[in-house]
Image (cartoon, rainbow, N blue to C red; front, side, top):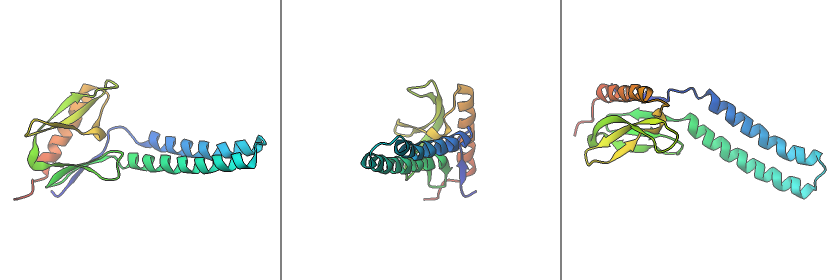
Length: 151
């Protein structure tokens, strides 16, 4: 098999709704200022600031909608709120296990490296340890299905 893509367990529908509400709120703010009879300069400044905030929020929301883990023959690529992936070379992976996150009480799969380091696979984060263990199993299956690149 050439490549396996793993997506977050939770639906991204809530994130889509947040993006829409974010955009509508920041579109409405300059309009509200204009109807409240503030000065035209103030309304124009807030309109420009709102457009910048809308663009930034939509961009980061789009990045959030693109969250995924791609298991390829040469590397594991983790897409998580960054334009480019975090690349973990396949030949450096020793094992995959569950670990707690530092905040929030959630659990995330960890890719343990041969050199002893570990990398969290954040798109596969879950609320409970059992759910995270299922995610670890999915990642292990994907690593087993995709044959490593020949050297």
